[in-house]
Image (cartoon, rainbow, N blue to C red):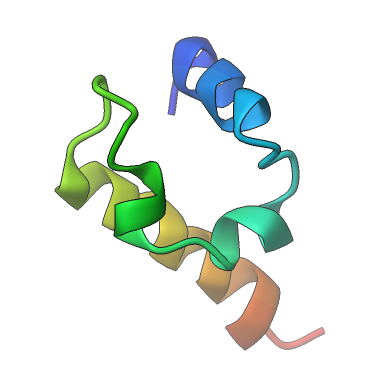
Length: 55
C-alpha cells in the first residue's frame, strides 16, 4: 500500500486495521488505483492481523 491509497482509505473513513478488516472488496471498488486482487490482499492481511493472530 502506498500513501495515495492510504489517503483514499482515510477519505472513506477507513483509518484502522480493524476498519479495513471489516471491508469487502466491493467496498473498495471505487478506488481506481486499487485492483480487486490488491484490495482482497490488503483486507485479508488486515483480517489476519486483527482477527486471527494470537496475542
